Length: 540
Image (cartoon, rainbow, N blue to C red; front, side, top):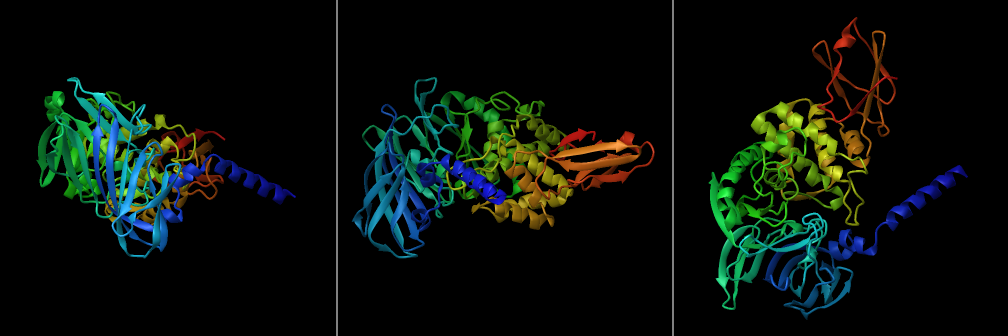
């Protein structure tokens, strides 16, 4: 009877978890056959943007290779956007059905594996307007101080299909990049990802701006930025550095973006060559705070140090650099180059990128300042729920993926306790998975192998629970008693302490351990709690 009760409770819990998500969530976040039967090779987007009507019109040519025999594929487009027709050169006009934001495209005969097709998906409509970009996702239509249109878009989490037809899943990037052609009213410029190919006056009051991306790219990274921009050109070795800023901010930007070169030198030293060299590097001023749009990083931090003039670490160190420039550029390696298959694993993007902030500080100001900064961020951790979300339903985990995730990496560094080895592991991680789509399991397997340690319990503790390990200790006479509390079953993690100026590594367990000390040694006992993200509890 007891066993049946446990099973019943477990099933009810599973039903409760599943009940939180809908068919709409599964269609957007899932990996069902209509999504996995084909592999996207390229996007060719050609659109018009009417700022006055807040309206988009155009098409996306989607080139794909068939992976499994099928007569149906899923493309995504928000249901408030109108479909103008879907065609393919061999099949002509294609039939389709819509369910929520999913569009199921039907072919009259079976598509053969390894064959390549291109569908033209025509559409139009008023895309959703963001209430608080970049957090809620959508377009921003506003004006600069000279009354010129100033337009941007940010859709991470919400979905790129908010504004263009796409296979809206991080699990598939176009292998051969994309082209983005955007027509806007004369006097305005559009800046998108990759290299600028040229502009064309369409002789109807609009000019089209053409951009080309050579590398694979996340669908949420494809972007448009419309404004009366001034183009500032710079170079670092043979890497192009381009800044597109509002005309009113040109002088300010020239001075402020001077930190880009030392940042690039640091990140390339620690993570490897800038991963999108062929597409160049851009900072593009936007009417919202920022976003890691690949090779066209959105910048809206008002040319201030810190996070809109604030230090998120509360230590003062965070006012040394522009948070948006450093953080969003860190995403070029972590998130844009290395991408998680499911947004439930978005910690793979945010933990490593948040950690890159302290890496930059260490490059510029040394280890102690980096430790001060990263530990200062601990005050922002909520421990509300696990960092990893629910899979296959478009669900992110806790926002703790940023700060707790970074402190997890700092903890791993000090578990390994060999900086030469640590930096090689991080460098090789960036290169091994460059332009690859991965999972949490792949990350753990890599770090276990590279470190020659079993770090799985550490990853599971910090990623799958909201529990912070507690190091409990007390003295009885000249004996130190210590153990781990608030941990998963079979949790294993060392902890460094200092006694009489000597660093000693302890290996606590959930059961109490003891260590005999010499007289007066307990007065010199010190815990390295800035190197390991743990809580300390003294007393039995």
